[in-house]
Image 1 (cartoon, rainbow, N blue to C red):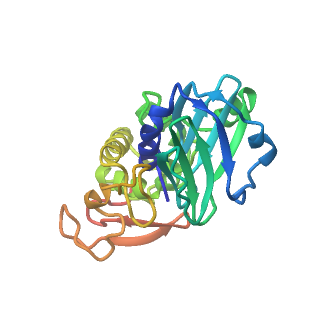
Image 2: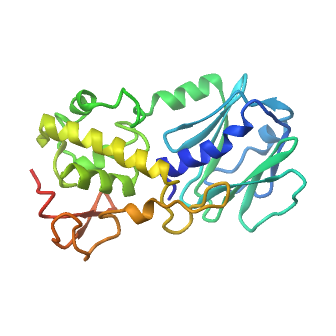
Length: 271
């Protein structure tokens, strides 16, 4: 599933479309997580894109009076091609047309979505989300405020979009290993130093993953058609039964919050 680094990689590939006019959007298949609003989309004509950015795991295109929000779901990818290229692929859903280029949203499992929001609707969407993990607002003091009274497992807390956005399963596993914190440790049991280490680990892991174009496990490709290469840097995710890269203890696998969790029982002792 595309997580923050994969979505950020996609956003950076779309940046050249800023300042360009979106002529229209073709609907090839409206069936996504929520059925595409064909009436709204059919009315789109010659809108100037003012900004393209990522919010949580969403790609957001900002216009004068609206925001277009695209979520890649579990298997969604984007493909950039020339305007005159009529290539389509199975599971293509939407084509965003510009004068010389277009980009195509493809989603095999149809868990992604595309919504057109008014300015007020976008504000309501945004205010329900936690801070961005790479922002200054996500720091040890903030994490302490969010976790000091919580009995929930820290892995669940850092994957809660109301606490901090975009830290998906892959990167939660890697960050907890880097910070030497067991995924089942209660939020309230973390020390100040552990919270500080965890914040730093989340920022480091995500930054490195973005630099390598994300992680390709099965379905993710960048809009240019490239794989994400952070997979070769994974230390614990998907490594159950392999030796820990730090101490040679065998990597364990448990289920936390219905998600697979990988950790070293020697390096990451529960507190």
